[in-house]
Length: 144
Image (cartoon, rainbow, N blue to C red; front, side):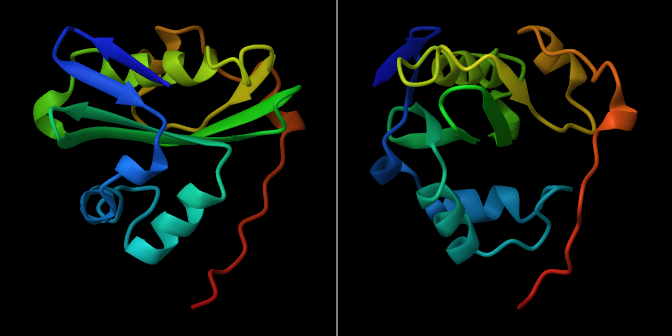
């Protein structure tokens, strides 16, 4: 599945088109995936329900992935837009593209975590958890 945005950018969910060298450069520098390897990124992409890339010609300028049971719940992660292409609506368009996919459009509960992009996600309907005290998490030590 493909879509055009701003007549310049193309979004698609073809995992074969992803540039894993670029993804490693980006994601290994983020606060949420500091030091992640290309192998880990590739394994995460392969095991995801969907990956989405954004491209300017052949150059990859954006990425996101999600996991979902395709019925009730989905989790969006690794949303990243290259610095020179930010503030053009790319992140929102990648998410809309994924959520409107025929396999995912009926999923009614989506979750994501962000430290600094609340305005990006609120612009497409995400809100803070109404009862965060009901949620729990487990962080296991990473095995190398």
